[in-house]
Image (tube, rainbow, N blue to C red; front, top):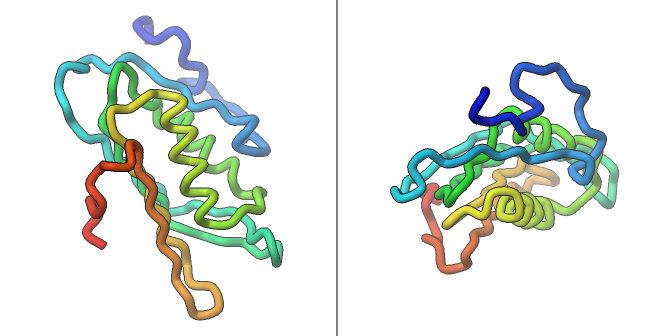
Length: 142
């Protein structure tokens, strides 16, 4: 912890933020920035609200990123993703906003966010966004 004094989530109990705008994605220094490697984060309990019906939407949200100078601290990521539970937004917008927020927080070399949303009305929606846009189109085997 002495090397990462700016991390406020680790070792502390906090209330969940009420929205992603109130959440903080904290980062710590990448100890091997000269090496290209992938970090895969899997959040199978993502939830939000349908902006039309107000009904809950659930998803498995997967984040794959190649860190640059910083890595995302996972407890802050958990709180950030949980903060979406009361947000009414289309699934495609969520995936793109999560990607934008990750890029803004840690400036990864590459990043991919994929949301596998539960079926609604008999249709299952999967959305994937990447930065830069030239990143591998299918790293999850879809």
